[in-house]
Length: 489
Image 1 (spheres, helix red, strand yellow):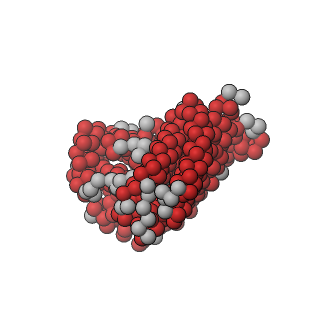
Image 2 (tube, one colour; image 1 turned 180 degrees about the vertical axis):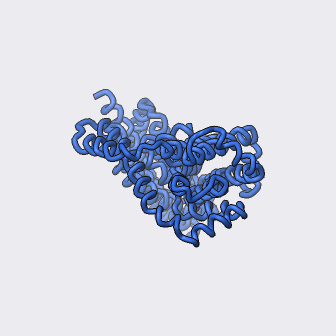
Image 3 (cartoon, one colour; image 1 turned 30 degrees about the vertical axis):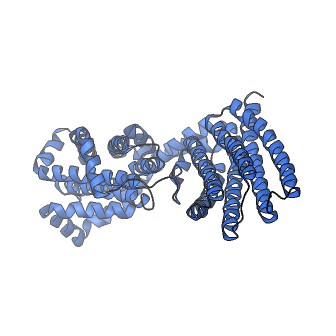
């Protein structure tokens, strides 16, 4: 799959960066990523093979066809195909311009001396290729430059090959930069790419004299020989290292030790900006991150109620810390949804993302109410306010009903479970009835002198916050049911 995708998009860097994004979002493990990365290295050799064809004479015609299809095509598929043809036309026109521009370079004594030095010190050629590709961020471009120079008889094969091998290491810089700020596994995926190419370069440098003699046997001019060397390098490298993927994974795990962080840390677990390149996958990951946020809010509700009943100050601190994570997720998820809304989504996906905007807001409000409950717990502790057994029993009953509603609404969203969503709507009605009944019972206790008036105020505030959480659970469930209406409309 890595080879296929890269052959189409003509960029191993893009494929590898996407892979880093998928690993960071938890869509792919390191074993899967290693295979895709190895395939991407094979797929990128297609560019050099295409450049080796002498198509520069018909490049203007290809450009014209692509331009016509893009400008006058009525169907999206026609325009997309025109874009592909236009891209190939630009590739060959660019090669022609580059060859013409480089011709004077072959007459410079400094350039001739550089070629001679690299010929005498092949390791230097590896570093030249590495540096060029690290700067340009494209091994295809630097290998195209090699082919252009070789086509002008300015660079023999023995000099081009070490630079070619260095190009393969230099292209890893893109993925390494993309892994900054990502999960440990995403960093490990980028390191697998680097390790893979370094090992391959070492192997081929050790047998460089053999490779220099073998490549011309395959036939073709110097451009084709460079393209063949590039293909042979990556296919052979993959055949050698693919059976040892498990050891590559162990090696990068040793380089970057430790486990991934837990769910209640201030980071996105399922989302990555690179996923915006594949909107359909991004939508699925968005739902997962919203579900994670919802479960954190539900967990915070439980912690807050525990703080009230057991007068646990550590639980109060935990609620405040988790609330910061929930607020962080609300900001980050909303920003991701805004960016996702500007990509090419289907009508159904667009409706889902619009609905999730409201869901995220509801979950954030659930988090706020849990925060309010923790503040009430702190006030209860500070002022030594007692609750009667009857009040605690009613509070527990109200909490359990609300907890069922919020958890069921999150499950309904996760599984698109319309029956579960309808249960939440029904439960919300029960929550309203409980809140009304418990208020009346509280007034009765006050009138009989069973409850402390100040404690009673806190009790009523707790009921109010729980009732509002029920409303937000109802909103989430209603969003799921709205999907049902759109599905069967």
